[in-house]
Length: 88
Ligand code: FES
Image 1 (cartoon, protein in one colour):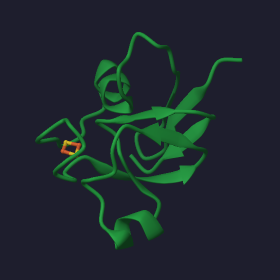
Image 2: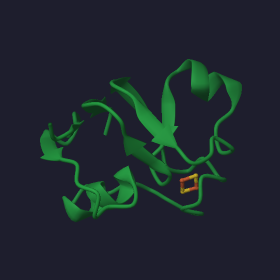
Image 3: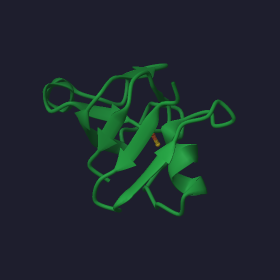
Image 4: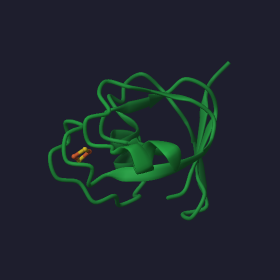
């Protein structure tokens, strides 16, 4: 079954497909603007809180312990594993 990605603040829900390399790309394709810098999981600029669901991240280098406790993810290196809801 297709995985759904909900951008809660933006009021948009869209279907994940593997043509996107990251949740960031999916967001941009849907006109949702997310601040970024490195786009490689290093700087933490793109972090967004994951409200529900699971993602896979290539690296968590841009997150500190507090971020991880708060369920922040780096959307530039994250892909959804289950349906997810993002605070974006
Ligand atoms: S833009 Fe730097 S960690 Fe995502």
